[in-house]
Amino acid sequence: MNDFSESTPIPDDSSNEPFRVEYAARVKRLPPYLFGRINNTLYQKRRAGADVIDLGMGNPSDPPERIVMEKMSEATFDVRNHGYSKSNGLLNLRRELTSKYFRKYGVRLDPETEAIVCLGSKEGFSHMCLALMGPGDTAMIPAPYFPVHMYGVILAAGNVVALEVADSEKFLQNIAYTCQHFYPRPKLLIINYPHNPSTVTVEQDFFTDVVKLAKRYGFMVISDFAYADVAFDKYQPPSFLASPGAIDVGVEFTTMSKGYNMAGWRVGFCAGNAEMIRGLATIKGYYDYGMFQAIQIAAIVALRDTEAAVENQSEIYQGRRDVLVECLERIGWEASVPKAGMFVWAKVPEKWRQRMNTIDFAMMLLEEGDVAVSPGSGFGPAGEGFLRMALVENENRLRQAVRHIGRCLERMEPKYSGETRPATTS
Ligand SMILES: Cc1ncc(COP(=O)(O)O)c(C=O)c1O
Image (cartoon, rainbow, N blue to C red; front, top):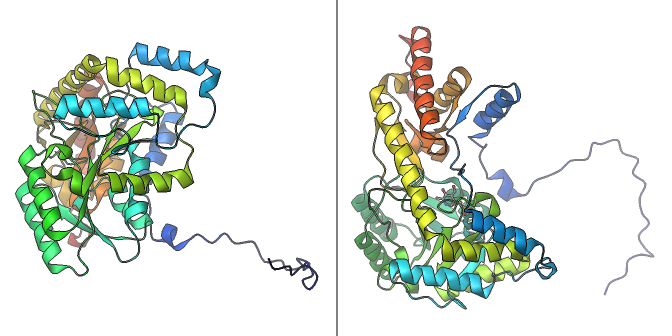
């Protein structure tokens, strides 16, 4: 131990220099938050009393099942549940998760070593990036991207190569190309199906090819399966872990935020490769003390006893999807019909794309039409020209939203007709 106390007087602070807070380089690497302008305006409008229809965020507006809330309430009154919990989650909750994987996908997992509970899948994902990525490491991610797929890697000091997801065959070919031509080779592939924001879905064969590529080129895989429980027209989104050999190369994140309407509860999971999970557990062990036990107990009930409600919730989203797509088509918009997820990914009409970028377009819909949507470029340049609309309002409100959009564009037409934005701003 060093002791400098005798030789070091404490200096007077006589300088009048203002104190400066200097952020770390990792924070300075982050770009300005693209949704900031929209969120700010939405907040101001609501404060001023406007009835804004908010299709911006995939934040479920329906409640969880009553038995889940009752269990939560009951568990809250049990004094044993108020201490720190285990950072990797209650074993019984991990068992419920692995039972669900077996029931739904035929995947056998060891709840002791191949499953961990996270404080929402976003927390787990970003800490997994910290466990796997460092300076000089590269991850391949989907383009357009859900922001944490990009910035989880960036915050872990890694680099990113974004590959177009629209065509799944091309996506696989681009993975192979990137692995053959990048040095050092990418260390990690992030995949997300049903994809947010583009709503692209895949079949099991796709994941089987991903596993082959991972083994051939030696990269790990993180599958973000956030929309596992929200699917339409009898489509069943496949699990990456159900492909042969997937557990050798990767993990999969799932969540109770979407299908179970428990977004605020922050319950997510990571399952799959035991070594990768051990890495995540190590980081989490330093950063958190686990999830409030009452939440974990209620989550067990939700996983065990509310499967029918989860299916019913998908039907609700399906009804909203049909209404939104039909209304958009009626005003002349193009929107593909998603097979899963909580969003419609709609193309901004050509003439408006010529006039302004999607951020300005989304701002106009909010300011003039009282409808909030997410501009595609908030998900990177590959999203430019699209809007993401979340199915979080009821069917009537969705109809009303499209009516507002249609009227807003009619009103704005004279102001913008004849205007074309410079090609460089796209
Ligand atoms: C693709 C994707 N991954 C992860 C998440 C985050 O989910 P959670 O609430 O479990 O953190 C979301 C939420 O919108 C998402 O769309």
